[in-house]
Amino acid sequence: MPSDKKLLGAYGEDAACAYLRRHGYKIVGRNYVCRHGEIDIIAQKGRYVVFAEVKLRRDASHGQAMEFVTAPKQRRVTMAAELWLQQNQTKYQPRFDVIEVYAPQGLATAEPEINHIEDAF
Image (cartoon, rainbow, N blue to C red; front, top):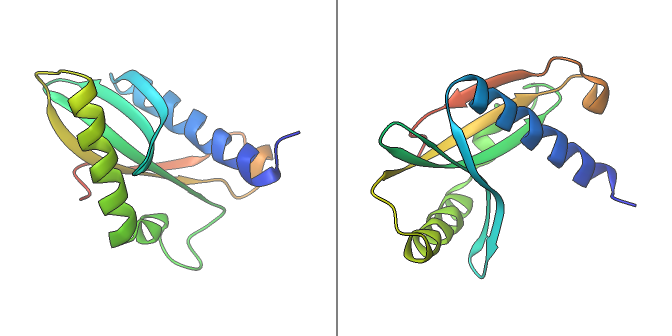
């Protein structure tokens, strides 16, 4: 049985994917894992292939969700994206986004608030 943290993480990523689809993105992959780390969502829109880090929080009382995408985390995502790009030839320009998902009632939140920060790092 998955832990509450894993369920919340999946909930946040599902909400982020739904948001991206509504805004014209095509989801190319989820939870890409390699020796460098993990990429939550890989999507494509226009001339970009987007590597998105999803951060779920109940609220911003302890800081914006984006603030938890630290410099070491950014390096791991960037290195994982480089490996993905080596394995997947694409004509698209890479971009790194952060998607904040705020769910005050956790899994019971019917409509989480989503903040999409394009070209975050």
